[in-house]
Length: 218
Image (spheres, rainbow, N blue to C red):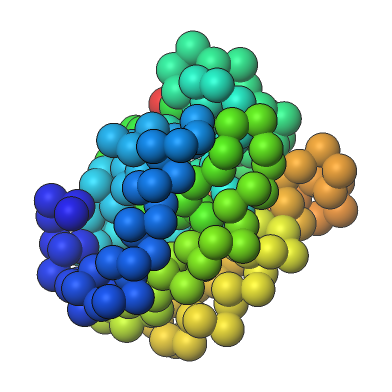
């Protein structure tokens, strides 16, 4: 289904009757509604960041619901699309933290660097935010986090906002680092996201564990 080692890591999940029934429902939604991201990009996060390569996990909630925006990576939009407000604030913190200025909204390079950009819900109906949040995606994306928690390689989990913070109980392995702050949304960024220095803290942790640091420049 994915085309890399995630197929082995998640084999039991993908082979389960419950997942097969769930995925059939998702396929039916694609047939009957305009759903984002496109079906080809549904598992983009896993395809671009194999299990063995994951260094960082950034947990998002659900995909952008506007036309041409979502492409399967949390907080990322396709090339040429106007930067969403949350991503603008992410870039502001990145510049304040590491002096890096980014302008494109496509975070594919981060994914290839080892940053798993994982939304808890992987689909959304056009122009209907959170429309698929109750379908049951979180049961399966939580399993992805559990599998990463089992990794012997130290990983940084970045949890922005109350929703993402709710995933912290899935991360019990003391080898990993969990960074929690406010969400980068304009409604909350000034309540603890700005000044969180999550990017430098991530790279410091990776360096201390003899893992190549993330190049956050796009």
